[in-house]
Length: 86
Image (tube, rainbow, N blue to C red; front, side):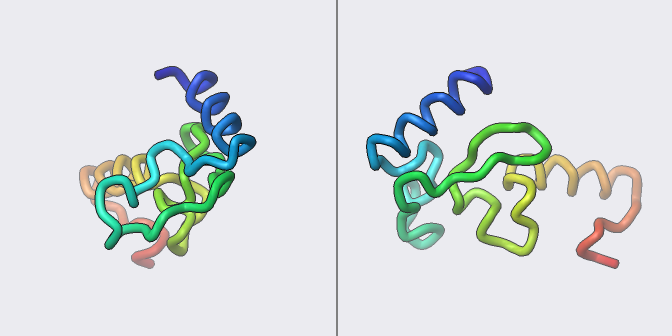
């Protein structure tokens, strides 16, 4: 799904007081007890509106877990420490 459609749906779900798409509680309550309606943020790397539990609940709220994983792999490949490892 493209970014504009995804973000449109996320905003619509917030207006309708529905849990954000991609909330980890759908997979396992141990990861998330359930994001509140409208509890999403815009990832600064990819621009997608992500549920709070997919990245904003850690020490680096500016990027989503997916983008963080890509950045982590990149840093391992080029053998430079990430900001959190300094």
